[in-house]
Image 1 (cartoon, rainbow over the protein chains, first blue to last red):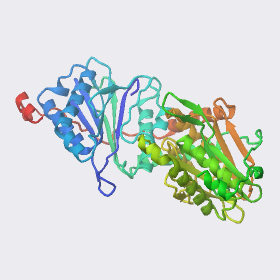
Image 2: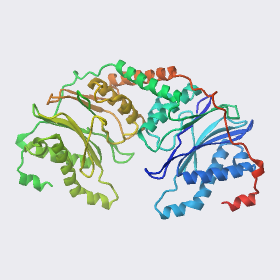
Image 3: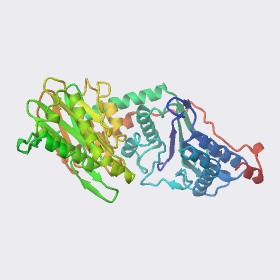
Length: 258
Length: 258
C-alpha cells in the first residue's frame, strides 16, 4: 500500500503434501464499479479458502456482506465473520485429525468516500490493518520475500510501478526457496479512487517480462556487491583457541563429566 | 564455502524469551597451527551449546576428539557424538517441561591433507555436508537471509571477499526482521591450506564498514529497481467479479448454508 494505491500479488501453487501439488488462483475480486472494490488473497487450507470465498460471493450477490459494508473496517469484519462461520462448520473435524484450521486472508480495496485500505484477517477472524509505517502485509511463507520489501517499499515515496517490481522480486525470492510457492503470479494494481479494476496481469513461469526482471536483478546485485568496499581484516588481530595441555584430563576423568 | 576457502559469520544475540536478551559470542575456534582448524557456530539453546563446546575443549586439550579426528567427516562425528552426550544429560529434563533439545552446529575447517569442509550437525547428532551445488549452510532463522546467498554465492566463482560481503548482507537482512538476531557480527575468513586463523573480525552495531555497506546496498537496490523494465498491464484485459443478481438468495437461505 502506497500513497498512490495498492499492489496485490499472489502465487498459484497449492499442495496437499509434497506429492500432491496443483495450480489454483488465490486472488479474488469483488467489484461494484464506481462504488467499491475488494481484492482478496488467501493462504493456508485451500478448502477453507474456497468455502469463505463462495459464501462471501453468495452474500455479495444478495447485496449483503461486502456489497453493503459501509467502511473498509466493516468489510474486514464481514470477512472475519465468514472465516468464523466456516470455522464453526469445519474446525472441529479438522482438529479431530490433528489438523489446524489454517487460513489467512489479505484484503485490499476501497469504498467510495474512504481511502484505500489493506487488512489481514487471521484464522480467528480478527483483522489487522496496514499503516503508513508498516505499509505491506504478507501471508503464507513470508520470510524469504520480506527483506526486499523492507528495503524498497515506502508508503510516501514508492510508485505503484516500483511497488509492483518489488512485489515480483519478493515472490521470485520465495519461489526459489519454497517448493510450495510457484507460478503463475497474479498481480493487480489498484489506483486510489479508480473504484474499478484497470491493471491486472498473470505472469506464467516463462513470461518474458519476469525473465527479464529476474536476469537484470541478479546481474545488478552482483555489480553492487562488486562495488562495495572491501572488508578490512587487518585492523584486528586474530584470536583463537589452541590446546591448553595443562588442563589435560585422563579419559577416566572425561568420562566422569558425561 | 567456495573454491578459495570458507567464510563463517555469526550474530551474538541470545534470548530466553522476548524480555531477556543478552549478547554472547556464538563462534568458537579450535586450532592446532599447521595441522587443523575448526570453526564452530551454534544456534538454539545456549546452555546446551556451552556444554557441547566446554566438553569438546576438554577433549581437545587432552589430544582427543577434535585434536585427533583423522578427517573432517570424523570431526563432524566427534561433534555429533558430543551433542548426543549432552542430550543424554539434559534432554529428558527439558522434555519434562515441554522444551525441545534444540541445538544446531555449523562446523567449517580443514585438516592437513584434506580439502576444507563445511557441515551442519543436527540436534540428533547426525551431520550434513555442504557440497559444490549447495555450498552454503545456515542455522537459526535462515529464511530472511537466504535469497541474497542464493543469488550471490557460487562455489567456483565467488571470491572470499565477495562471499564475506554476501554474508554481511544476509545477516543484515535477518537482523532487520528478527529481534532475536543482533550485532555484534563475528566473521572469520579461512583460506584453503592456511591451517591457522588469519582473518577474523567483530563488527559492532555502528561499525563504519557495516554502515557503509548497508547504505550503499540499499541505494544500489533502489537504482537497480528503477532501471528494471516497467510492467506492461495493457496487454491483458482486466476480469473481475461483479454481483450476479440472478443468484440472489434471501437471508433465510443464506443462513441455511452456514
